[in-house]
Each structure stands twice: as structure tokens, then as C-alpha cells.
Length: 351
Image 1 (cartoon, rainbow, N blue to C red):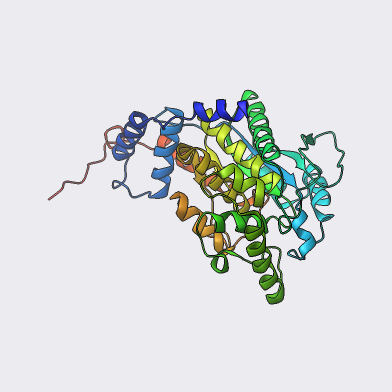
Image 2: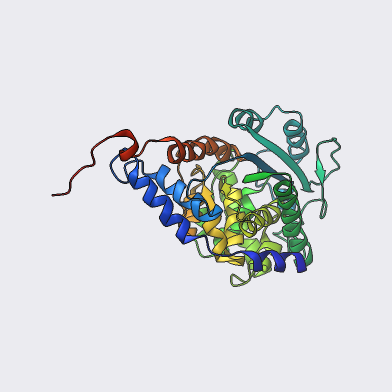
């Protein structure tokens, strides 16, 4: 708990003076003011995060947290639990979608076993297993409060290790069969109607969707999570990889590093992080909005605006890896585009 408390205390508001200086430079560039839209918003946010009005990206890294979920016993997923360790190996061997997109974006990947229900062995795997998967939240708490806290702190440790290694922009990724169910439960506890929140996840049919909704309602009734206590919510109806990603997000904010948020599960982690420390939202960049119906609601709850609408629902960090290209482009605009004065271009005159 001490590590978590120390991290939260370090999170400060972004540098508004740097935001203003970035905005002033953007207005001097050879274009109508505000005409590059979201690219300009990204520049200003990065300036505030880093304190540099002309921010530059260096080393990028996608942090994938992997964990299993006892609630799959209820039949809420179209895929069996053994897919989790199989996909972890796929990540480590470079064969998954996130590997392809990260290579294309020039980003590293790290994968952490924070709660896979079996042992996975690979020289590149970070093993910080809190427990072998969560318990079935439809029958009781997914994990203890101590385990939820430890999982958050694992995320902090992994992020800080990458930051110490020179990474200056992070992205969230995850793997865990059944993890749209706890993500939907978290959003429901924080105030959204369960029927509007729950999606088809890995591709369940109508019968499966009805079962998933019923399971989430049961889990909330059985555990009675306290929406004013985000760690209580996380421990009762959350997941180990969700907790780990919340830690990654909090660590990024504490170290003034931008954190690119991926899809539905990553945004559940972001929502928990925002409830632990609201100022952490200032460091989050929403990459895309997924096909999961609850994702848009999560982003709206945090007042985050996704830059991409790609009809994606894979997870892994894939949307965040795509967004790296947009973020890179924004920084190049700020650093390389000519000003009206340097280019000898006349400004518009207001009438």
C-alpha cells in the first residue's frame, strides 16, 4: 500500500504555462488557427505533461498485463481459458496483432504475467504473479483487497522499470479470457446501466449475452462493491490485469509520462485510476473507441476523446499502437512546420 500511496502523492496537474506556450507556437504556424484539430490538442497536452512546448517522443513501449478470470466458469466467454497463456506465448514470440502494429510504430512490448492461471515460461516474460487468476466473482470477491493493491503496485513497478530504461511514452495492453465481464461490472458499479454496458466480448451469441448480463448483476449483488472506494470495486468485481494497468497509468502520471489508453479493458483500468487520483486523467491519451458499447461510456465518464474510430475490439494494445503514429505526427508538426514569419507568409486579417 505504501508504494501506491507514494505514487499517488507524486501526481500533479500538468504544466499550464507549457500548454499556453505550445498554443502560442501552434498559432504562429503557417495554417489557420486550430485547423489541425486533434493534432493541436495532442501537442498541447504533451506540452503540459512534459513541460516542453515543443514536445518530442523518444522511446515508446506497450505494457501488456496478462491475467485470468474465475468468472469464465459461468460461461461468459466464447474462448476457453487456456487461450490466455497461449496468447501470452504468441506475444512473446512476436506473432500477435500487437507485435505487428508495435513494430510498425517503432514501439517495444513488455508482457507481464500478473495472474495467468497456469505457469508460462519464456525468457522475455516478466513474472510478477499475484495469484493464479481471480476467483469467480459471481460467487464472491474476485480477490482480496491486499491482492488488488499488490496488483496495482506490480503495474507501478513494471512502468517505473521501463521509465528508468528511457521510455518516455507508455501504452496499455492486456490479455485475459473473460475480461470484458469484470470491465463491464466495474463500469456498472460506477453508475452505468448494465444492459447498456455489456457487449459480446470475444463473440458470444444472444444467449451468451443474456447470461453475461445475469452474471454481472449476480456478482454485484453478491459482493456489494462500494463505488466510492475504487480498490474495493477492483477487488470484488475486477481483474488482476486491470489492476496492473491501473498501476501503469498512475506511475506514468507520477513521472509526467504520457500514457496511451487502448480499448475497453484498458479503459476500465483507466477509470479505476481516475477514481484513485482524478489528476491522472490529464496524462491519459485515448487512442480509439472500440465496438464494446461500454467503452464510449467509460471515455465520456473521464472526459476523454478518442482520436480513432476503427470498429476494433481486439484489445492487446492494438488501438494504442496505431495511435502512436498520430501522436508522432503531432509532435513533428510542432517542431518542423514553418511559422508565418520564417516562411514569409502573410497572416489572415480579421474583419
